[in-house]
Amino acid sequence: MKARAPRILMVGTALDGRGGVAAVLSVLRAGGLFEREAVRYVSTHREGGTLAKLCHASAGLGATLAACLLRRPAIVHAHASSGASFVRKSLVLLLARASGCKTIFHLHGGTFREYALERSGALMRRWIRHTLERSSLVIALSDSWAAFLEGFAPKARVAVVPNAVPLPPASATAPASLADPADSHAAVPGRILFLGRLEAAKGTAELLDAVAQLAPRFPQLRLVMGGSGDLEGFRRDAERRGIAARIDLPGWLDAAARDAELARASVFCLPSHAEGLPMAVLEAMAAGKAVVASSVGGIPELVRDGENGLLVPPRDGAALACALARLLEDEGLRSRLGASARKTVEAQYSTQAVCGRLAAIYNDLAGTR
Image (tube, rainbow, N blue to C red; front, side, top):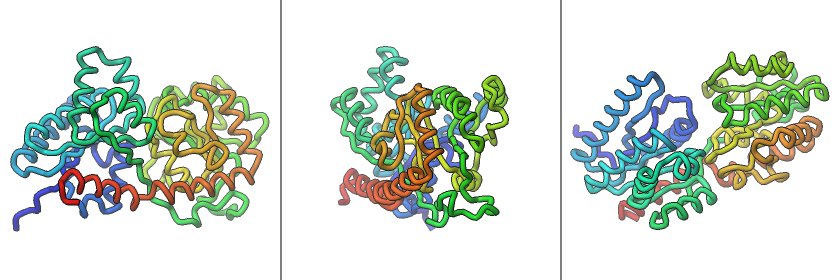
């Protein structure tokens, strides 16, 4: 039997990768989008050494070209961030346009503004603008990112589609005071969770400073930093601050380990310097956790300060320590913010809602609405 021709050719990073984009795409696939919309997925990036990345990118571009020429999908939907990711996806979209396909540029990178305005020369800025404006549609994760893209590329057609996140069972979101102490998956008082790459851009130095400041006040305080990076370097940083005994560095966490850590956390913290709409914050809110996050990128459109979480300025260790202290010492506030956070995700960021929005976009572009 002849294989069904793909309606949508979607291009991005390997689905088994460790980044936020891979998490977003895995949620969409699990939500049934790929099957319902006849999506064929092609990966142009995989973690590994330089040679392995080049080989994978070349294979992905070749598969994209073959699909565009031989199978003629209605739409090519490329997920991109900054740097090499943008370059790969801009070439994908160029091939798709030359083949007569409609194209979607889906922006995920929290540092894209700096990439476009500061790190790129005049020629690359023109290519970035050209790629955005020649795309049939540009998808931004938030209104603030859409405003930037419209200002940078005035001729681009921009739509906002937030990231989606599945909701865990409500039983997994009980506050620490109601949990069974013998339950290894119950919330633990004083336990702060960070999920993300261990690097300065994620605000890790400010987080360690805040923990060092708060440790004398909160004997139960413990920080779990789940993510890949220079683990030994962070252990040394913690030792220099005198808090090595308060820090757990489990490395990158798969979905099951991540969910277990979210269940055990009392507070979630992501004090990044720049972001798009981070999956880690959405996952924590879906799990009913009180969140402290920096007011960058699309986060302020997700986290409303004092309503469903707490916002702090980026690079402000003192403000971060203050916000964390408020939550550590006030269980009622933690419970209220966590419950409101879950309701926010359920109402606005559910897998069903986001998959429905993407399906409507596909129908509009393909002329089948």
